Length: 343
Ligand code: AMP
Ligand code: MG
Image (tube, rainbow, N blue to C red; front, side, top):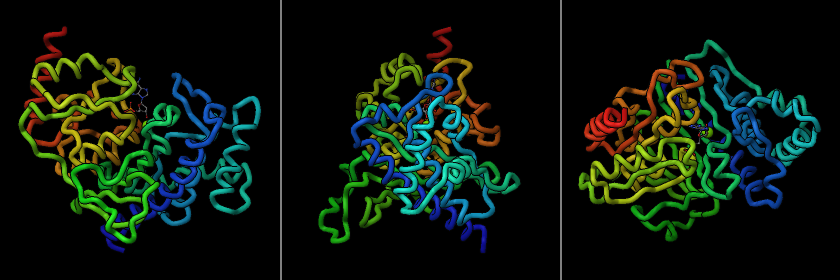
């Protein structure tokens, strides 16, 4: 298999694992007692039974199909096993067994969740089984995110966004497509050099492109719903400084990258929430490839390329800035100016 074919195969496997996982996350999100399946990890980050079930389903698929990949994933079974009661573990086991329609033991489940692959492999997959768990718990946007790194470079991305409508206002109405089936939201897929695409649960795939507008009056800025995940004042100061008139679009998770990539907003600014904060790699790889392949530019706030070789976090970058392209340098300059004024 050529390197190209291998990458395509890995992306296809990630895609099918993520779609299967999304069926479970949708079931849990639309169910009654969503909160009862949630608990808190260190640092007050919520995690739910759906996070674990999603990761187990994705990694089972990858373990079965892709031998030469390394896994960098958000969740681990240790937290699940450390609970005083085994109710959560049992709930996750049931969810996964139901989804697969096979018998699954607790040990088997934990083995899938903790699968790390081949630590020497040149391809690494970053996995966020539910990106935006806080949005998920609110019944709002979230994503199942799988990024592909080759020698540390982002080369592939799959982003299943079950709550994001398809295809968005800039694309042809899919209702004339006899194969079209709605209900699964929007899935974004990209491979380096091959463009970025969005697709519904079933039906035609659309190539997507960032919106190249240069008129600041129409520029829209994406930001987190959770104020504590960033620096809302800096985002507001940038909007005022550059006279950006399109408004702020607040959305959870990497769905923001998808929205930028299909041209429904022009800037995604993610300043650090505090000087010591470093973003997780699984919160960006998939989105970065999708945005870049749609023509966007993605760097940190200093205009520096994101460095995904530093482990589980972006240790060598200050925040993240993704834009539609034309205004990128101006925004980096404006941010430097605003930050120097603030100190
Ligand atoms: P968003 O929905 O864009 O706000 O991003 C969700 C991601 O924010 C989660 O996947 C977390 O990894 C990450 N996160 C959690 N706490 C913080 C924090 N204090 N600062 C920045 N990001 C955070
Ligand atoms: Mg996340």
